[in-house]
Amino acid sequence: MAIPDPISPRSIGERIRHTRKTRGLSQADLAKRIGVSQPAIANWESGLHDPRRVVLAKLADVLDAPVDWLAAGARSMLESDTHAAAAYLRRGIYHVPVISFENAARLALEENADPHTMAEDYIVVTGNSNKVFAVFVTDDTMNLIFVRDTLVVIDYADKSPTEGGCCLVLQEEGSVLRRWNPSVGRFETYSSDPNLQDAGLNGETMVIGCARVSIRLH
Image (cartoon, rainbow, N blue to C red; front, top):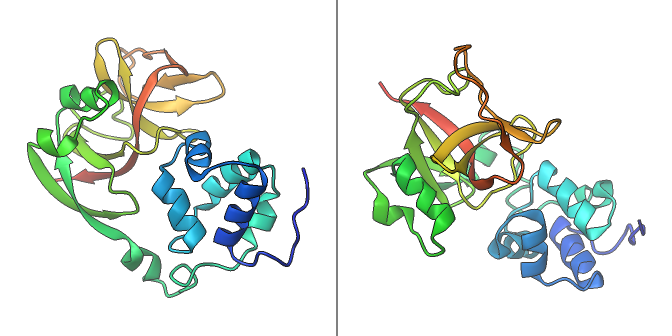
């Protein structure tokens, strides 16, 4: 791993752009390799936002650059605001379509599927992605995390679950919520019911999107 110049470029975004170009990658190439959208790369490089630490680790791996060097760059103007409420207030406000599990499967199978055309209702949430939809939990296979009738917001721009992360995946019978266990390479159930056996979905299962937030409605 080559150690980049510690002085220049100065910001996180400039360091990402400099290293990406040095490696001969386009923004689209880099986005595909780390599992984000090309506009996300553009936003980071322009200093509009900074990537999260877990994403910085992916960037460092793909760009063959020290993660500490990337993270040590100057923060963007917005991200440098350290007020306790700043991170929350920077988030966008989105009207998230609530759709069925059946329609959620279409987002994996149909290239131009739009969850807004499938909306049965909407809920307002804050976040850092506008590629989101929500589904109501309808069974007990994940009830140690999501009890029935919990509304789970799914980011379908993110198809790279972290260890223990929950995501919506597509299997032959349709879309289901599962928890990623990288140690065995499977998407697993997480239920209090011993009769609900592990689905045993392997790592090649199609990921529709990763869970971002859950909401109980009363």
